[in-house]
Amino acid sequence: MNTNRAVEIVVAADEPALFYDSIASAELHLESTDVQDGVYGPVFGIKGEVYSIRTAGDRVAIIADPLGRTDVIGLKEVLSTFLRTIKPDMVIPDCLDTMLQLCTPYLESVSVMQKTQS
Figure 1 (cartoon, rainbow, N blue to C red):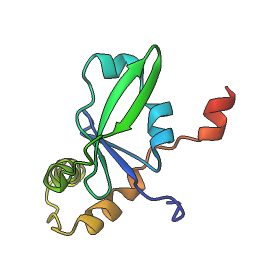
Figure 2 (cartoon, rainbow, N blue to C red):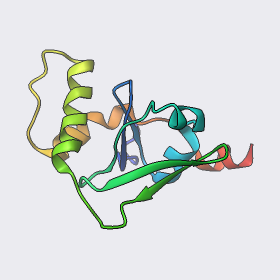
Figure 3 (cartoon, rainbow, N blue to C red):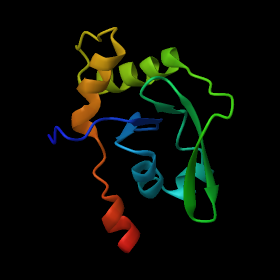
């Protein structure tokens, strides 16, 4: 595990969640056809910030909620579902920071520099 990276963006999905260290990484990794097909659910920042996910052609855009809404409960539900999927007998912590730390090993590995150069 690379300890220099941390979860910053959580995308609800059929996996049941994807974790990224930046919005840019998520935008580069997520596929526009999957966005259009509704594969992805809510998108959250690590404090429960709500984002929308859209496409512009073949590009994915993740946009902060213009009203600055947060949904910590929704974020915790996504994290709990993910953690129960990887370890069904896990006692799920109530602390959001602890939940995010448990998800850090599952960060998607996307190099923004490599992806933009290809």
